[in-house]
Image 1 (cartoon, helix red, strand yellow):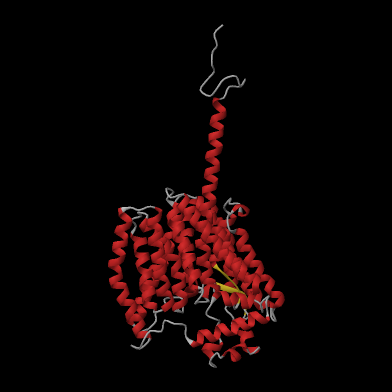
Image 2: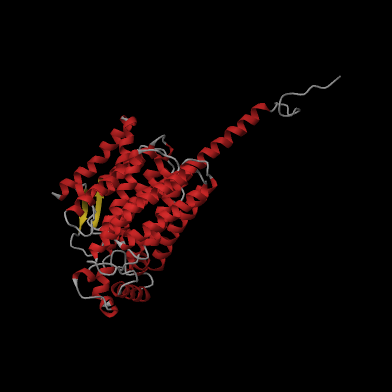
Length: 457
């Protein structure tokens, strides 16, 4: 059965290419699908494995391909974007190479290759999204897809809460994963509303995302969502203060009177009415001790996708005091950067941090240097999403899951594609200006701009 599913997904590639070429007006549905598929693929079983290690305790359990992979590849093959000229390509490739090099230090290189393959899939989606930024209204349809995914999560989490769930996880299986994914929807969509976009789908998308975050009852997600909102409101106002933005801020404050009580009630259900723990708990600290010891003993890492196995078989979890139960011994250190350091060593940590910093700096420079460009608003929102995720990474590891990396790739594609398109437009304007100047210059070069001069005899 697995091979039948794999064959169907692989055969979808030529079909998608033919569809995109023969029906260019229907490409908008492909862009919309990019936004909604990360939230629905696992739910609808739209994936298949080339290699399947279902019982592997790591976060990548095989070489998986999805319909989103073939759709992204079909978009690339039917577009004319130059990958070499896209910003941040080298940073992303450097991180992929770091994960690939970690295979040399892994006791099971095949399992480490699963993560490198996963990163390649995210890279393909990044290039696909960047390639459509030059098409009119392509970004609109991509945003509608993201909003539809958030609306779905809002509806599902409400149903789960009404069914008695203390922590609603939507269609993603875990509230922490859902919450981190929604960073990449909430902030770009809200940035568009702040910029003056009046669209019901976008508005409902923001409300759906905030509802799902509140009902998820994840301390980290709620806290970092609040930090991200404050950063977005502040930077958007710095970029250009308008009465409309203050109106949106006021509406957000009013909405908080509904969202905050829901979030508090969710946390109260989670902790059974007891005190909510804010300081790092002993279990997280034990995980961090294990990861740091692993990193110290293996400066080049133990191999991507290897933390759980190495922590248990080499005694790191035991010596660090990690509780002996299946829940604790089968999960990763709750810190993305320590996980990267332990698994991929200094090289993986440096390239990962460089990727995040490079995205944030390039995106902010574009947003504030091109304040009158309407695309600068969604770029700012995407940057805030990456920044919030990067900060959240100090307390969470789920960035390494492919669902999160798909949404990360979409945000990166929006940022890089917009910058690339802006550079092309700027070069084109410069070329036209030079051509127009050349046209008014005389052939003999004896006269100035504005026409030939005459002299008296």
